[in-house]
Length: 292
Image 1 (spheres, rainbow, N blue to C red):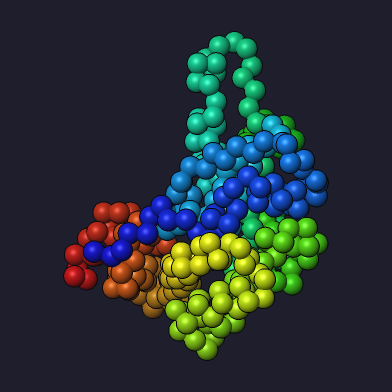
Image 2 (image 1 turned 180 degrees about the horizontal axis):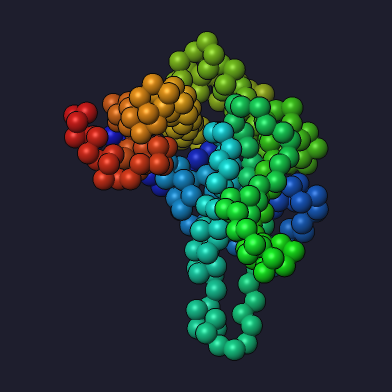
């Protein structure tokens, strides 16, 4: 049985999972200066979006409900649909169920959806993803809905890799330092083993006042989290590459199953493999029986 990594925090959620850091990050993204006395209420639903690690943070601030996600693999264009399902659960969590059945209008926080992209593949500084892009052509029915779709969800995606969105990084030191840590890790990873790269990147950052206080407090934990994230990122890349190649040679289904078997052999959890491949738990469990 592979190690279960479900419900483990990512470095991102650990670093920004407190009101003060979130206040600085949110202010930088929105281009505002949020006063320190404005309360921030974190209401994340753990592992609702990604089974492998908790890299999403949901919080309310100034009558706004913000869903913030850090994404290191290639951008998933189904993110608006996944966020639609997520936001329903958040509203269910924070709304008074008794009031929604009464005549008076139940006011809820205004939603904002933000993805911070930190993957290896090239990506623009900023891009907008819309739920309506996924809608099938409704033909003449469009004339019945007015100027726009009857349901929409807009996601703002920002590239936070080094060299991108410099103005954003300049306004939030934690974000700039976090991006530097990931960049240094990938640099060392070209010539070192994952364990060596993690330790070297963390040591370099501490010696150069990059996330020093955070790393002094969580150093060993950060290295372990980074190793898990590296494993997940490699598995996602392998799924993409193998899925394309094996899809040509054997058919897409066979290629995905091969990726799942490889992931099982490497000790990844069933939940994580379901997340990476899109296979259901029953199928992955069946494949596991064949691997053992």
